[in-house]
Image (spheres, rainbow, N blue to C red):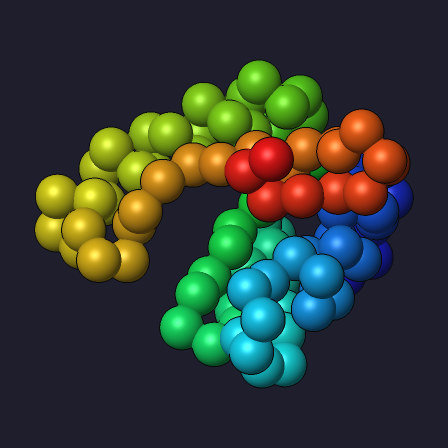
Length: 101
């Protein structure tokens, strides 16, 4: 799947070693119709695609964040070691992207 919704910079960042702690290893990306999951070492990061389909609306950052927070609330009680938190990808003062910055 390609990115035509303005998320290409974030996708490139999460696909690179720069987004991950040192020594995390190669990054794997897994795509679904509504999300992208990035795996490296023992960590996973998931973002929702900026899409609006007849059965889901992730067209705004607020909608994507709300959906991820609902997923965390539903899944964390059953898998607390897997569902840790919802964090933002932010831009640092020097222009670089950061996870949870």
